[in-house]
Structures are given as structure tokens and as C-alpha cells.
Image 1: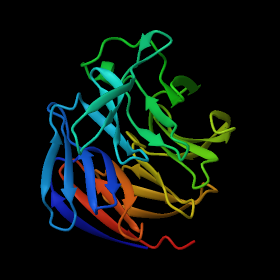
Image 2: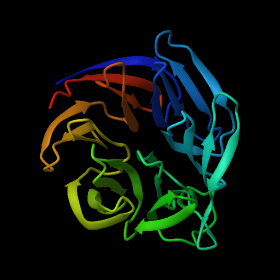
Image 3: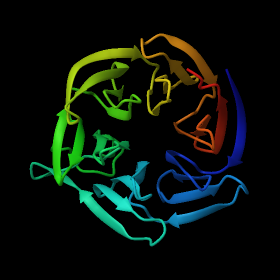
Image 4: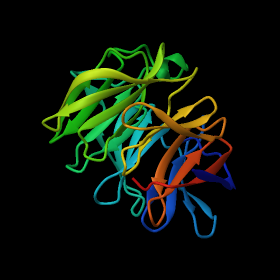
Length: 268
């Protein structure tokens, strides 16, 4: 189903985002987390933002700016690679600071959905959490907690019609939870979609046919919307990934010391 190629050796950890000029943005590992850009045609890597506040997951908005999960200080920011400007969208809920935002998705209506686990405190660079580990939606200038009850909510991704939200719970038990999206802003009918392996799932992605890609100990698992596993991409150490390429049939995978690409057969 796939062919796997090592693109480049580099310190690539989280937040891969593919952009239409055939480039990939990603964040590096701690302690000196930076946002970098890989030109896929040449393999050239440039730093577009150094000292990016322990940035983690990223997404692209409609204007081509990066929406960034920053962990220290904790915030969701908007970064324009062209100008270098950074704007804080939200850094607190109900008067309490966010924990350490982890992953983010921007839906077609411009809403920003993100997970906020307390990894920063567990890893020693954030104070004790004042908020429960949760999933949030930021829209029209307001932040809403849309789901809680997780151990460590991590990756998230929407179905092609944006009527189902998948959330990776990377605590105990480790699993992927699915929610129905009600009226574009509320979640309902939470249920276990699939169970995962120790220390996963981290990355989540959904292709145009609705198949779900989830990181696991052995690499990347591929699920049908029914929850049945139908394939895998063997790459131990895979952290996160994003779909891209000229035809949208490439899965770019970060693995801490390299970036890989898997060529997919995404025909429905």
C-alpha cells in the first residue's frame, strides 16, 4: 500500500505542516525548540523562528499563517513566516493558564481546535496545572472547553466532512476516541474508536477517503472509519505526520532524527 523514503536527516519532532509551495514546516526537539522549513525540491532547511517557546503541534490557517501550540509559556499563537510576526490568540481559560497545548487543527470555518494536556508539568518545565486535561475550540474570539475526561489528550484530526473529531488519548489507557461534531462547535457521543500501544497515539491524520492514520510503537497504523485496521507503515519512532504533496498522496512523517515520506494509495 505504501513505499517509504527517508527524505533528510534532521532534528524533526512535531507539527509537520505541508504548504502549497512544496515545503514542510516542522518543530524541533527540546530544549531549544525552533520552527524550521524544509524545501522539498532541494532538501534545504532554514530556521524561520528560533526559540519558539517549546512549540509543538502546528496547523495552517486560510491565510497561510501557522497556528502554533506553544508550551512555555502556554498559548495558541499565530505566526506569519513571511513577516515573522507572532500574535497570541489565547493563553487561558476561565481565568486560568493553559497547561501545555499539544496539537491543533483549523477547520474550514476558521475555528481553532486544540488539545491541552499537562505534559509540561510532568516534564518539569511548567507549574502544576490549574485546568483539567481537555480539548478546546477557539472561535469568534471565545474559547470553549468541548471535551474533558482524558488522561493525556494528544493528537487530533477531523473526518473529511468535519462531522467526526478523533482524539488520541496518550495516557492510560492509550486509545483513540471519536466524537460526533454537533452544530460545528459541540461534541457528542464520545466512544472508543481504537486502542493503541504504549506511549502512543501521538500523531493523527485523516485522508480524503476518511482513513485514519495513527502513530503506534511499530510505526503508523491505518484504520478504516469503522475502526478496522487495514494497514500499517513500519517506522518505529514515528512521532507525527501530515498529508501533502502535489496530489495529496504523500504522508510526511517526523521521527526525531529524520523526516520520511510514505507514498500512499488514497483512492477511495
